[in-house]
Image (tube, rainbow, N blue to C red; front, side, top):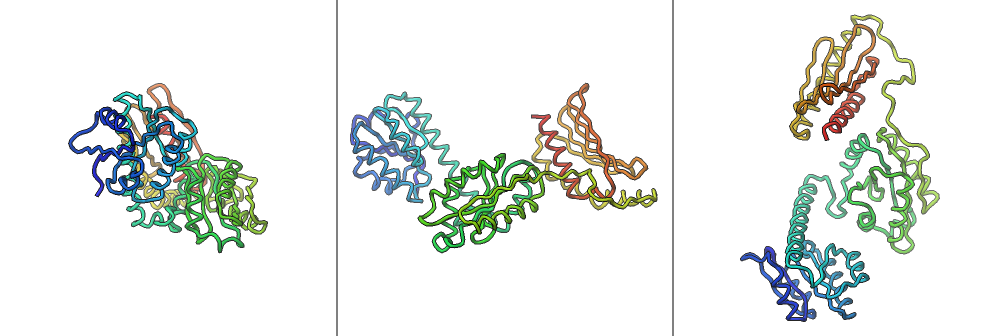
Length: 415
């Protein structure tokens, strides 16, 4: 069992051991400090199971080589994934430091550092360990809920599309569909492909398998041409004689299904060509909700139009307002959220301190619906805009998009 705050120092120098122990002001009853020689380093690690390892580096070339080998062995063993390794230099070697960072080391010290510096580094290391533990717990929960896959860590086939539909509504970025070329699939397992992709994408990027080999990727606020650099890095890490292809589309708040179709078409062309990345020339943008590409039927009878408007309120507007209120009550801190529906108009209101925003639909008595959006920044400063829509344009999807944009504008005003 892992001992809480168990700290291990690896050094052959007893004077260094005494010096570092004196510098660690954090030591309490629950802390356990021990020092071990280099030749027994990994054996001690397995036995002690420390959360922090200080590795003392003198000027010896052999010691530097031993240190890098030690890091590799630690990171190859899942048992030590929470262990934080901190090299302590007698004299800083930038080459070794860079190599250590490439191998996953995220902190370092000089033997001449103050007691406070050593203490702060220990606190940071303990905080990192706790974050790793929390991440592991969250990962286990997501696996049980079948949101992410255990082996790859990617989002599951059932979840990835719903996630991307929501993401692409709210922000710009590039969507890519990636797959190994057909003639190389026997040499590259999905799990191996996933591990290579994870190594080369950012923590904020989204990845998930659409089928056994096809991977969906979302790069937020990234141009399509810039994603090809990421794919080139992935290609370099592939096994010998293996290659990948991808279809890439930029999305600017547009319909995900349209982007998905485009990206899949470009992937098909890329696979036929082999070892290539094809980028769509056009961006999938948010549709103009108020333009009419084709003539729509107009309800000329005002009584029928009024009945249609009331039906929209009952079936679309009121349920949407209710769902939006419940979804945002915890997200919008100290914000009063209200909505009201009446015979000829309805509104959705957000209020934070003296700032109020109103999203209002009204039926002025003719064959159009007015949507008024008002943001009261203060008592003397108000932004307002109006849209007029046909009754047939009042759909859950279009209204939901407008309402989400309205909430985002409100949040920006209250940042």
